[in-house]
Length: 127
Image (cartoon, rainbow, N blue to C red; front, side, top):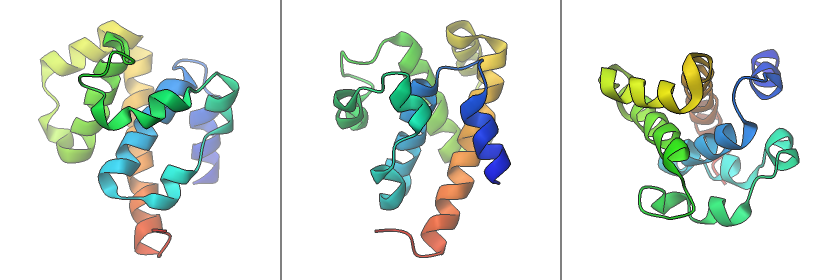
């Protein structure tokens, strides 16, 4: 699991800030408090904006999030809620925003974030 985590953050296909915002949004939806307190060093190095983190719950309407981030955050939420429900149109929107490679990295990363956060909750790392 550590090797997968490292690989996600060291890949050069998708911006680590996008990944971190998606990771944090998944944590918010799951109530994964421990994960919400953490920040990816790669995302911090890439310029993660804490103001954006603070506005993450209102990403669909906040002007802080552009169309690219909205596509990625919407995909992250859909993968969490119902991965089978990702529509062709939604997938095409994400591919248009971040490319096919970015789509694959994002989809894989979101599944990994969900799995690890749920495991931490079960193991009692909620607070």
